[in-house]
Image 1 (spheres, rainbow, N blue to C red):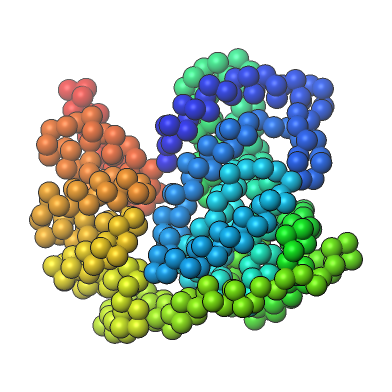
Image 2 (cartoon, rainbow, N blue to C red):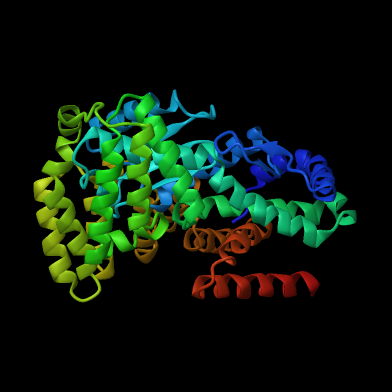
Length: 436
């Protein structure tokens, strides 16, 4: 998916960066020193580029993985406080941010520029603030050590080298290289870190943990817990933290060794953690029921509706539950009822794209094109999707706005499924009309 604003911002800098890269390669000397590891390395992106990239992707990744948790503001406030207590000791000053994502998958991730997310499903597996700090410190290192941005730079380097020095001044080709590289940022939340990156994040994370006054033993007990869970092959973990940050006995051993340099005995922060996370633990049954509802939709929508209604009874303020209820009703063809559920979801959280997308599809099924179009537009403002773009392309076509229709179909055509094929067919038809 194109990010034109980011592309224009990066284009102004990258010809100079490309020349520097050539100089670096020809002299076999790195262009910058990594602020965490101290290793010299090629640096294509400036810190301004890196921050801009993280900021451009942060909201998109949040939308992609469930939106923000908003039932209670205490968990997010606590996560931010712990994070800020740690970043004071980071080897690299960045505009760090921390959010709690409303998703049951136990995971945490870091984007370039210090944009960090931790999932609701991981928070309820922790026992104290020191364990939370160990996870956040680990993610802070990933950002500070440029593990994510180095992945993007490798992509950009391959693109630039394939274009050649002469084509670096060709705006169209060069822009494609930058956009291709920047798109990697959207998927950094799901990339698997290699052993060296994890080893580095563990070691320096313990260092930050120690400097912030937390009990460094939490980093060891946490890894021991993760190794045991991995052995049990818990499905949710296999698709979450274990997919991106694979645990191992080696990491446990390395963390124990790091305790010799950064000895335990600091703050466990157990009481403060329990107070601030109480709502998450109290609502755990409701979220389990919601997960069962989603799973049951594949086999029995009536069972799914039963589960989600139970979840709503337990926690009616959770917008996610009302959105799931809308999805179930829509799958049953009850679009008028679905609209009501989606509307409740939007009332409780007006900043999550899926509620608008679901309601837009139900309005569309009810032939209410005006309200459907409004919802698709709002959905795309929050998170651009092929289905909303395809629908908007259709509305634009009906209104005779061919250029707008092409723009939306172009976006939808990037989908690899049936929507993308339909959008390509629409673009082909419009091209034939242009030629006639």
